[in-house]
Length: 287
Ligand code: PMP
Image (tube, rainbow, N blue to C red):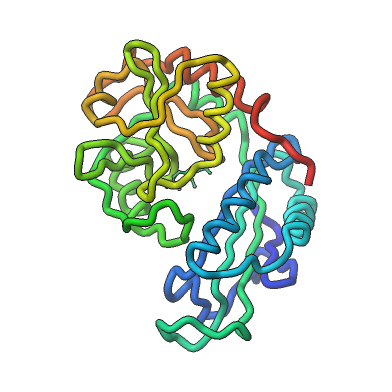
């Protein structure tokens, strides 16, 4: 539980932390965000996350609301005030509050900045990784710019709710060619029967996952074979292994996709190896 949340220059008690009713993040999802893993009080891959934040902002014609140094200082203070050692930092930047109008407000309207920290028990994720998770699949219902990390998450919210109803932890979306794009809130990976690790190459249909980038570094470090290309749902059904990556899951094995067991139906050795080595390779930075 967050005890205080940074909102527009102030550390506010959790129950009182609020943005304006006409905030454009609230009215138009005119906002972007980042989620950064916190491990042992340190940020995992902060540099890459802040670079992606700057990119997402640029793609929707918003400037960085403050210097990277100032943002890091706020993240550090938010972690300290919430006494988070293992968990996550969430940052949201919106185009600010202004009378509702599709037209973009002028530069005089200050952006909103929210930073919160939350504890997450690592043991829970490790226990889940021992069992592996199930995936449900569906046609990708999202817009054509899923490479921008906007808060416009309703399609993913509804898809993940449907997955949960069907006993799956995550959803994988497929494109018009029957290829997997990515997960509802994660990147999608398979290991082929010949042992190649495959994940879709970056395009505008997927988020350039930071954990994806560091998992690729990890695979290279372990001298595993890696291919960045689209894979079909059929290939996924017949894969030796599958897994997802995200900042809150790191590398999470997948043991079932729809009604097909993947491989032996147990987490596979490649996913286990990547999960185990991940934190040794990802950049872990003090703030
Ligand atoms: N794809 C989507 C759609 C996501 O929401 C996320 C997590 N925010 C990811 C991929 C994984 O990205 P990351 O590794 O940076 O957490």
